Figure 1: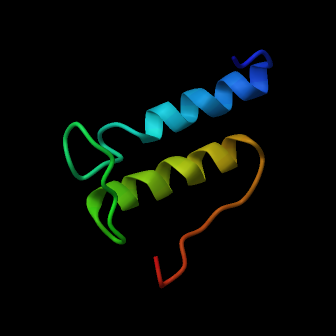
Figure 2 (figure 1 turned 90 degrees about the vertical axis):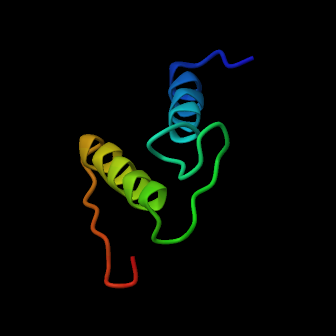
Length: 62
């Protein structure tokens, strides 16, 4: 049972990243390196980091 707002947010974000468009397979979590789900996940994580006042970038390796 999650009781803190931060914990609830972390669980909600994990749940969000476990569904489309963050998975390349419908109904399960499958996120191969450099696949569409991988790219969507990186973009979402970077957005959360910027919202928190952090900087984020994707290097040449992806």
